[in-house]
Amino acid sequence: MSGVVATVERVRLVQREWGKRPAAERGAALTAAAQRVHAARDELIALAVREVGKPVTEATAELDRTVAILRYYAQQVFDPAGAVFEPTGTGLLYTRRRPRGVAGLITPWNFPFAIPVWKAAPALAAGNGVVLKPAPQATACAIRLFDLLAGALPEGLVAVVPGYATEGQVLTSTTDVVSFTGSVHAGTVVAARAVTTGIPVQAEMGGHNPAIVLPDADLDRAARHIVAAAYGFAGQKCTATRRIISVGAATEPLREALLMAIDELPCGDPADPKTACGPVIDEAARVRLLAAAQEVREAGGFVLAGGTASDNLVAPVLAGGLSEGHALARHETFGPFCLLQSAADLPTAVAMANSGTYGLVSAVYTADLGNALHLVDELHTGLVKVNAPSTGVDFHLPFGGAKASSYGPPEQGKTAMDFYTAVRTVTVQAN
Ligand code: NAD
Image (tube, rainbow, N blue to C red; front, side, top):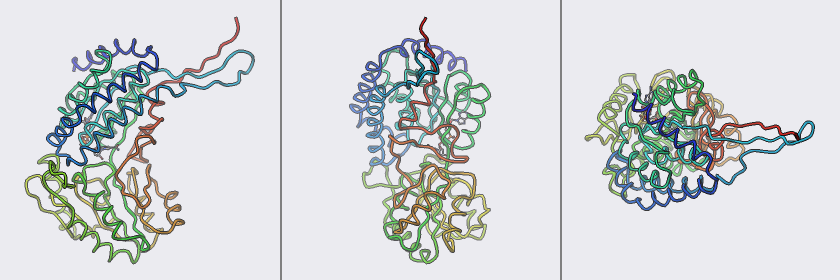
């Protein structure tokens, strides 16, 4: 572990100088970083397809978003870094935001470029150094990405420390700010450690994301959205739809529309541009998903689709008939696994959607604006999508969940610049 500690200290030495550089210089460096990543576009896309099995069309979208995020934060350096207030007496009263120091980033494997960059870019723009501990399954993506970023930045300002939980834990006691994305289990440990050592921390974690479908919705369109959101990239997104709550008369026709959409979903080789649902990340995930389908049957539920696999290609599972208290009905099963539930009326659907510990994203399908706005207010999730898939994130807006899905301030957008800076309140009086 002494290697990780030494890396943090080396980055800290370089950061002291970087934090003093003019905003325009930091912005220019991030623009150059965006150009370097863009120039390596094809290579990086192929790497993500190979290393984490991301379907090439999604990998391409992720890579392009990564470049856009770098360009966005390259401009944020010119935003105000504080505010001037009326003094209580004479003189000047103002706030000024300053970089925190070294940002420790702990990331999952499912967005091997976008997540490291949506943390690193605002951290660097604000004048911090960065140490990234990527998921072991995405180490090659992280190392190549940071190679490219490093070429545009002062030598030693960014570093990757490959490894596992132990390496991640070191960052929670040696850096100046910690940003984590991953499972609730690991995020809770990371947040607790950082709080204990007094380091500001944010943790973005899992979800058990509901899609509520009302009878007045365009059910075929809703089914196509839901199937894409539940099973795209084999359901390996924190924002994937995990539960479909059909309300009243929607149940029968929606079930048929879902089964048809699943049937038409292109599954297979992630290198094929037509593929939407590729393999799961590893053998352990395959075993876990097949066991979950089996558990549904043993608990008296039904499996309407999927539950089989060929190598790591797990056929999308649509299941239901579980009691509300069953573990599979309450916790994220990270993969192509989605539950179909029904509610007699809207209040019951809201209560079902809000039950449980997660609160990342919900989707609502209806033609009634009043119902849509009512649900936006009533659903306890950080994001609400109306007539839109639960997946898909806009990088210029805050991103974060409610309840156990998140700890600390949200990520992305301008909020991120606040997280990676500390406020000084300054009082100046004439001598
Ligand atoms: P994971 O929690 O297993 O690992 C995430 C990262 O944390 C990895 O780098 C891992 O090595 C590290 N880690 C694990 N235990 C740790 C510990 N005790 N201390 C410090 N670091 C530790 O998650 P994963 O399998 O890589 O990713 C899938 C999970 O991530 C899912 O639950 C998914 O919902 C979640 N996720 C959330 C978001 C979001 O923004 N909310 C985005 C993507 C993925």
